[in-house]
Amino acid sequence: KVTRMITVTDRQLHVSDDGDPASAYTLSRKWVQNDPELEMQTVPEAATIALPPLPRSEPVVEEPAPICEERSEKYEAEKALHDLKEHWVAVRHHHQAMTRKKALRHRARLAALLEKNGMLQQHQHQSLKQQQQLQQPAEADVAAGLAAVM
Image 1 (cartoon, rainbow, N blue to C red):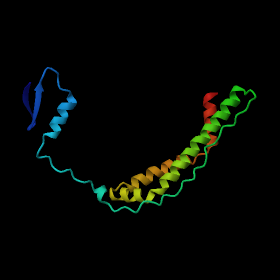
Image 2: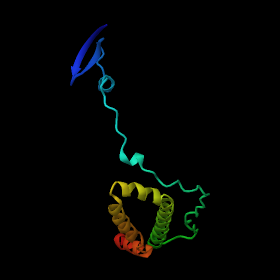
Image 3: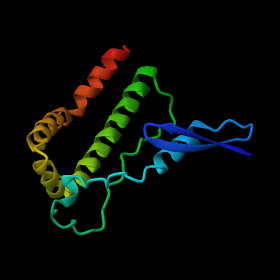
Image 4: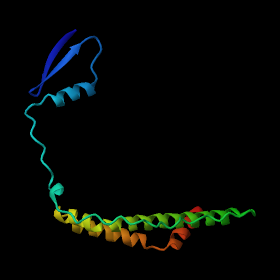
């Protein structure tokens, strides 16, 4: 078994020449591990911020998602499409509401992190836009979907 030593940017790699080519992953690992003068990684500022305590974990009462009514009589294609569209719009709005509810629990901690990094105003602007988009009535979504289908 012959071992060769390769120097790449002041680091030495010991590569065995046993007929099988070494994979790029193996060479990369050897290159990374062979750096005795590697500087200690600095801790980002965000890791040293004193955050508000975690919110109490209360039992989350989740409302059940809307259930699609099953009917045994035959549908017309347009009526079936309309009912299905209404159902899934309601389900989407339900999931969005649950996501907002969960995000509100951690608002204070997120605000502390964003404020420290100077990103609070940018985040507030984006969340305001998102809230305006979410407040559009579901009927407009249904009407737009049906207009696109027809």
